[in-house]
Each structure stands twice: as structure tokens, then as C-alpha cells.
Amino acid sequence: MSAITPSNTIVGVNKALLAALKGYLDPDNKGGIDIRFDLPDVDSVQSTPTVSVFLYDVHEDLQLRQSERSRLNVSGGVLQAGWVNLSCNYLITYWEAQSAGSDGDGPDSSPDNQAVQIMTLTLQALLNNRSLDGIAGAYTRIVPPQENLSSLGSFWQALGNRPRLSLMYSVTVPILLDNSLPQTLVKAVTSEIVQTANVDMKALNNQLWQTLCQQLGSGGEQKLARVSIESQQQATEEDDGSVINVSLVITGIIDKAYQDDLEAIFKTWSDNKAAATEINGTEVHIVDLQKSELFAV
Image (cartoon, rainbow, N blue to C red; front, side):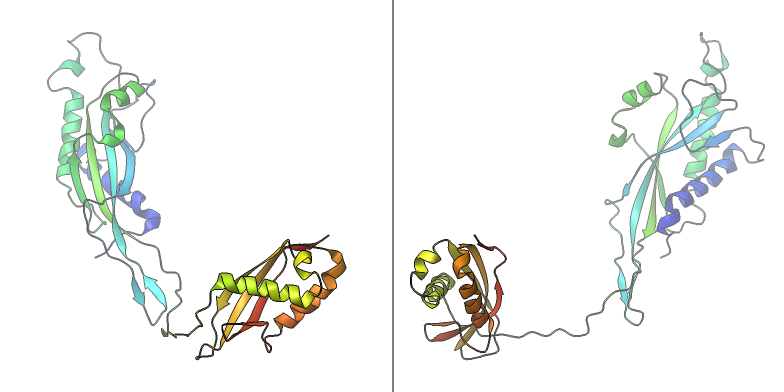
């Protein structure tokens, strides 16, 4: 299925709609009827009879549940564009070329007034062009007033309290998804089950703190009263549960007098060749030690 590209979607619909309307409203291309894609100035009188085609709403058409997701081009390493349906909703109104008459004897008050004639031609143009030229897969229809406009009464009030003959027109058009950026292909998927020792991390945190106090020497518990240790178990290559690797985050406040002693202990702990401590017969190795939140005063 072909579709127009994202960069010219609405422009393409507008041009196709203009061609369909001109075939009925101005077949000789004499310019007797002005077709414009905005709302005229409500305070001015148009120089020629005007049909306003105003696009007031654009959204993805979720009721027409047809779409195509992107497909991967393996050889090129890119996603081939998919498509979704875009709904473009128009308010089409007629604007006369002279001010409204003050009585019922004017031409605008007759049963075959120009507004009725022009909008009848407009209706024929839309109904006879269910498919728009150059846009494959477009779906068009005349629809009742939409909730998007709140209420026609409020709409006409905003346009100077002068209701005009109008109709609602909806076009659903397929739009390509622009997702052709290079993609990283997954060459292979592997999995690995790593056995780890069943260790109570809270108990390990306490034991590491006690070990640090002992290695600091006399009065270690008082010196480290405002220091805490948080550990997180990491994967290990050992398969018998005899060793666990952990990362540590040490926070708190210490005295500068024993800062150097602590740094020496941390350096020893960070040497993964030796165990920092042992718990339940399992050696504990420190693979990462963070102490940026440990302050010496």
C-alpha cells in the first residue's frame, strides 16, 4: 500500500481537495469562486463569493484500525517505514460577496440563493471524489458536527454571530512513519547463571564495620560511631559459593587524626586478591569502594 510521506501529508490532502472543488466550482478557471484554506476576516466583505476550507483538527484515526508496523531490513540495518491513518477534519463554509440584506426580498433570501447553489456544488464535488487524486488509500466522508468544535453556536459567536451554511468534511489518509534511522542489530542472545552465596547483607554490613573498627585499633568503635557501611553483592566466577564480591559505599564523619590510617585500610580492602573479611565460611572480596561521602573534620 502506498502512502504520502510525513513531510507533505497535509499539503498533499489540501492540494487534492482544491483540485476536486475547482472541478465543480470553477471548471473554466475563470476565478468566479474563491477557494481558500483559512477563515476570511469576519469584519470585511469578500470581493468574490468565497468557499472557506478550514482545517480545524488533525489526529490519528483510531477507529479505522488499519496500520502497518515497521519492518527490519536486515541487510541494510534499517527499519522500513510503517504507516498509520491520519484524520484531517475540515469546516467548509460559504462567504458571500456582499453584506446581508435587511429584508426578505433580497437574492440571499430566495430559495435558490447563491449560498445554497455554491454549497450544493461543493457537496457534489466532495461526494463524487471519495478518493483523492495522487493519494492512494485516502478515505473521505461528510460527517456531523464534531466535538472538537465545542458547539457550532460558540463557533459562530466567535465569528461575529453570523451563522453560515457549512458542512463538516473528514479525510483519513495513510501516513508513512519516518523511522529509517540505522538500527543496532542484535547478533546473538546469551544468558549466564551465576551462583552466589546466600549472605545476609545487613549482617555483612555490620561485620564489615566491626572489622574496620578492629583494624583501626584501640577505640575504633568510638572513632567510627558516625560512619556507616552499605554493601551490594556482585557477580563472581566462583561456582561453589566460597567467595562473594561486594561493592561498598562508606559514608559519615571521621576525625582527621586517623584519616590516614583509614585510607591504608581501604587500600588493603580494595586489593581484590585478599579477602576483607569472612562471613559464614565465605570470603568477602571488595571489588569497588566508594567513600566520596566520608568527610574528615
